[in-house]
Each structure stands twice: as C-alpha cells, then as structure tokens.
Length: 265
Image (cartoon, rainbow, N blue to C red; front, side, top):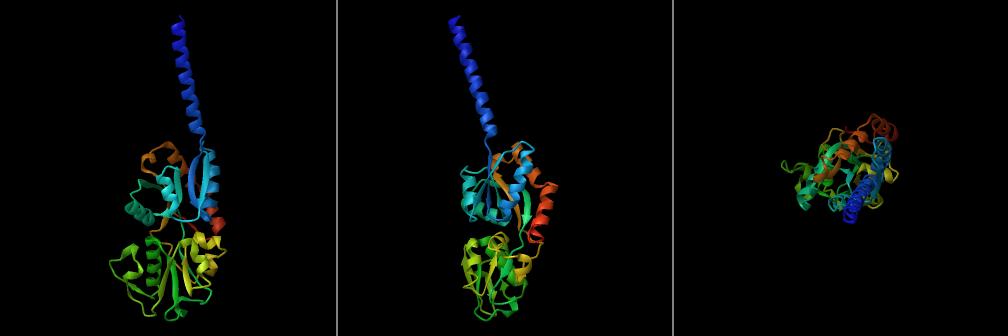
C-alpha cells in the first residue's frame, strides 16, 4: 500500500507541476519589439485590444533598425513591428534569419527635409544630401530623387539602389549615408536629408508641413508584423494580427497622425 501511495503521490505531484508550468507559460507576456515613435504609440493601443482576447503584451522599444530582428531571431522577442518587407527580405538574405511576415500594419511615406532650402529644385551644385545607410531605405530615397528628376539610376537597380547606381547627377549631389536614427540631427550640417517618418515625428518634424518632398503613398514599403517562422501558426499570432487590424486601430492611426502615417491593412 505504501508503494502504491507513493506512486500516486508522485503522479499527482507531476500533474500539479505540469499544470502550474502551463499556467505560468500562459501568464508570461508576449514581448513585441518596436521602434520609438508611432510604432510604439500604435502598439500601446494594440496591447489594450489584444488584452480583451486574452493576450498579455510587453512592448520593448528600440532606437535602431537592426536590433529588433536580431533580438527576435535570438528568441528575446516573440515578434516585432517596425519594418517593411524589402528591409526584412534583405535582413533574411544577409543574416539567415528565420523570420516571416504575418500581417501588414502601417505605411510611413518617407520625407525629405531641409533647413537651408524650401524645395528640391533649390539645391545647389555639390549639395550634401543625407540618406539612410541601410540598403532598402537608402534605395527608397534614391527612387524618390529619381521621381523628382534630380538623378537617374541604372534601370536594373530596383528597390535596392545605392549611390553607386546613380548614372546621371547633374547637380553633383554628394550622398552622405548615416544611420536612419541620426538623420534628423544631420539637418544642421547637410543641405537636405531624407528621414523616415517615425524618426521625423520623434524629432518634432511634421511630415505634412515640414517635408519639402515626400514619397508617394502607393509604394511597396508598407510595414508589417513579423514573428519567427516556427511560431507563425500559433493561435496568439492570429489574435495579435486581429487586434492590429481592428477598426479601433485604423481610427487611432487616422486621428493621431493626420495623414503622416497611413493604415496599410
């Protein structure tokens, strides 16, 4: 009898431990990486909506574009919300990340800003022009300059054009490649800079009023939610996407950002 009692006690203890672990696992919040600014602001609202569906979310803010994917791939995050697909595709290609998109979020038309000129046509010969130093956002800016008639790129350059792909540059613009987060601070030293909307807003710039030129809203640079490939079919992912794609979030984006950020879902 004692042996049977001991066995039953051991089984009961194991079940209790297993149940306790399951509860703890459910109570553990999902860590979602975002960049400071609109992505963080929007996810604070997503967090509230997701909680109604049983999801607990911890928002982790980053100040650059590289660390959120590195942290996600390493398992330090459960997901992130800050990048567009061309950037993610390049990161996957360069670093071998097993990260996949699971839903679109918002679009940030990139803007060009200057403290020295009121229009791109006023840029003088040899003007120093700041662009993001990552290949996708840098190429994005060069395409805007090509659309504005300032430069011409090799036809085959595509979305990942670099200054080396510039084949016509009548004003001999000098491209200064900087980390995207540093570009707002470059305005005092450069003739103009292209600045991603999240960093522009964080620096107190109003894209609708302060940008001297802006990317078309119809672009392939809609941002997305990303998770590790192994997690994409998990129920919490569908719940997270559902929360982001809610009408409440669409209204928040329209009201809060007044056209400087557009809902892409």
